[in-house]
Image 1: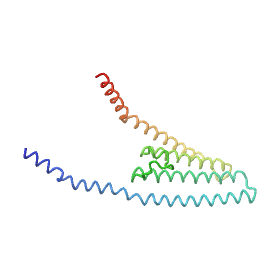
Image 2: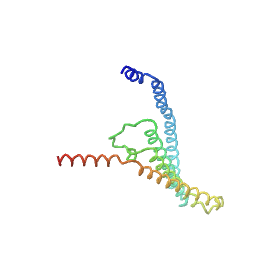
Image 3: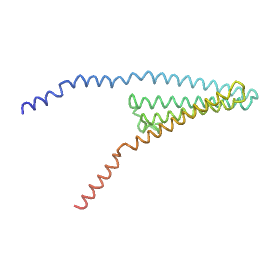
Image 4: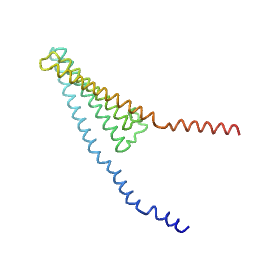
Length: 206
């Protein structure tokens, strides 16, 4: 009996205490990533500035002259490209901080993103892959519009098309892997519901 009491008393104050401190330190090290996300916010500001400059250039061309339709289309595609990259940055900043650093604690806020409520590492990867496909599509469309220029070669068209298809295949593979992982996880909610239903039936029978 005495040996059992000693073992129980010595266990919490034994070698677990230094390991627990190391674990707390490693968990606290996640805050090292905060400057990275702050830097991405600065990059977001740069893209907003670039968007405003391109928009001013489009206004000057549209109302100050008669530019070709292809020129206007390319400028608009450039604006769309900037917006999609900005959306990608928002997903990385908000989703990455929520997933790997700390909770944002914005539950119930009317402006809370809909995708943030169920975000995890796998969902974030799929969303980032879809955003990269959108950005690649804009660049590929710009290349197709400029295909008549002598600077655009057939080899460049083929390679950029293959790169875009690679992004598409990668996104499909990530989505399939995420679905397979979700299907392999046990459905705790269903089991609890069945157990509670069985318990209620037993009570009614009694």
